[in-house]
Length: 484
Image (cartoon, rainbow, N blue to C red; front, side, top):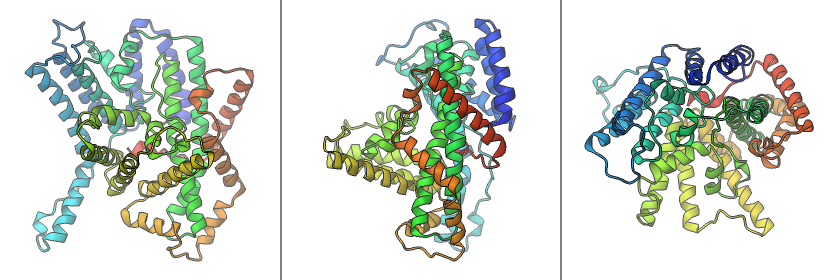
């Protein structure tokens, strides 16, 4: 089930909100947990068991970490000594979560690479080849394993108190607004909200505004840009102009697709009384790749920083170790997105650029010189877009083919006129232009929804009508981050 569907909008959401608000305060977490499991199991009920398994493991490890029942009401002393049992509990949590993620997401990837290595290095040893398992990837497993794992790490570090009630913890892990595509809500960010949260008219209204903005971004901007991107990426040849135009359309698609979904998730959270962290902050206005990662998918970049980069040593162990840590974090962050070498290359590109910027001493602060600021913004945007080629392409060969097209090295068949015709369709040109204006000039949904008046609500009403109309009339409505 996706947010931009009539089943969610007209059936699931009204019923979930009605039962949530009609229930007494002490039953709301239970109602929300049940609603979230129905939401998650709508497409494939068996995956609910996997979600429940991950939840039970981390809840049990949390009980050991807080020495339940003797010290269940106290947080561990930050930086204090941990017992062997507590260290073992943390290890079990981390290993079990990474094992689940590794098996379902990377098992076939590993087998395929093993087979390629055998065929290349040991020809004639077909007996060493392994059959692919064709494992179905559970929706949202990349998100909820990271989220659930943050609970035991936060409790172990003393950043938050643990939860003794299994239903409350299951509610945290399975919250349907951000279950399948984030933002990744770390436990320390909502620990107090799981026990006591403020539900108000103002918060609910801002949540509605967030949701409408996100739905408009997804349906009205991301979808038409996605059609333009598909036309160029799925075609064997394209002109230089069409290649850059299609790539810019994909940059818009992935931004408004994911940022739109995140805004809808944040809005749903506000309706339920939760305040989720900001996940996007106008990333295409960044003046460096370093700044880009402080604005793009913020919940993932901060998770990787706090739970991987800093534990690896961060920038505390010398220059060379800092560069290595940056590279490893971005490489693994690329593989987190998908079991493919294209994602690994995408992460590697960002890792190399982060290292280069650090070596050059590039500062995050915007320079006062306007031409220099525009030059840095152009460099960042072009670098990000070129890296998107590997993110979008099916394989490395296709990615290099597209790169060649960008710089005039591709073959342009006569059939490429079909691409040009689609790209020059007035509707797509208008939506592409509006999308870039919103990405580069308009305030973010986070800022725009802080205050709402009559004018804004009239605009939101119009956007909601247009979005619902487009949703019911469009046959093209993919969601990119569902495959991660």
